[in-house]
Amino acid sequence: MDRFRISGGTALHGEVTVSGAKNAALPILCASLLSSEPLELLDVPRLRDVGTMRKLLIQMGTRIETLEHQADGQERLRLTSDAMTHLQAPYEMVKTMRASVLVLGPMLARFGEALVSLPGGCAIGQRPVDQHIKGLAAMGAEMRIEHGYIKAQAKRLRGARIVTDMVTVTGTENLMMAAVLAEGTTVIDNAAREPEVVDLANCLIRMGARIEGAGTDRIVIHGVDRLGGAQHTIMADRIEAGTFLCAVAAAGGEVLVRRARSDMMGATLEKLREAGVQLLESEEGIRVTASRRPESVNFRTAPFPGLATDMQAQLMAVSAIAQGTSIITETIFENRFMHVQELRRLGAQIEVDGHTAIVKGVAELSGARVMATDLRASAGLVIAGLVAQGETEIDRIYHLDRGYDRMEQKLSAIGARVTRVTEKTPA
Ligand code: UD1
Image (cartoon, rainbow, N blue to C red; front, side, top):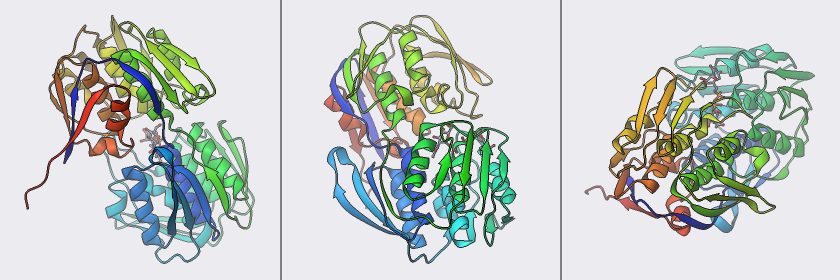
């Protein structure tokens, strides 16, 4: 199992380029199931979750060719779903990556049936998929849960008006992908407004779908009989961008984060400015300059354009060394403070009261051995390690590899002292 070894205390300088977005790539890979013609994708990031989704699609019968290894480790892929063999997402796949449930909507819409394992709980919370199921049922599908699997059937889905009980990102994406091939018009109210939903909609529109309102809380989809092939470039990863901005906010220095765009970043930039960080946007990206210890900031996570729950751990790491006390409330997931006890091992002063963390900034953290518990928690620990005095070792870095491409190399290129330690398991 790999781990990171970080020698903290150096400021960051130079340039770093953000990869294609994990949370856009995953649904867009599934969109290939909606057509028998090839879908060509550029800027597909090389991540463990993308690898899992590729495996799932291949075992369903999709052919995936790598057309080009692009700069910065990204790939140009061609996916062809013209001869599907297994209309199923098995438990073994869904349990390692909940986003596997994104095959449900497209499979049902194009083939009239789908068998997808229920995801079950995960470390950060229960994360049910009831809204996906309810929405598809409203479109006329027969939805049953049998032996831990969602069994869905429909001759042809019908357009419907769906109001989701809460804002759900993959729920909105699944229903949007189902609706593009349904008969008639579907309206999704209380839709997620995340930029990744917009990127998926843009790809579907290129394939011939008729979608209005993506990026607002009402998406209207006029069903069409078939979709064709298309070419699409995956948007840049706003969470990876935000993570680098936080790294500089905490460690100090000046870095150009290439491909970062303020319109995708929601409230993250506002909070960093409040913390005293300078941000300058240009065509190339966002230049971040941090010349002094950050100020404390209070925030609550919320659906886009509110503060992303996927940025909470990284901003908490910044707050841990800020001047003053920060109050952080997590509203999206019930168990997303697992990084707190690890940050405490580095000397952070954090109290948790239900969904709220009270972070008393300290002048200095001190390196220690800590354990990554989930993807974004790991990113928070890396940021804390960059500022901590001495050496920090982060175990279970495979969590980080799910969503960050070669983070240690990207950080090393801007002056951080981070190495990946690979322990060979004895034969
Ligand atoms: C997506 C992102 C994830 C991010 C999250 C919130 C992907 C692949 N993952 O996850 O990185 O942290 O959005 O921005 O895009 N819920 C239900 N029933 C449902 C669906 C959701 O109760 O049917 C609840 C969840 O438990 C959670 C909240 O709604 O409390 C939001 O979850 P959701 O937006 O669906 O998260 P994901 O789409 O799984």
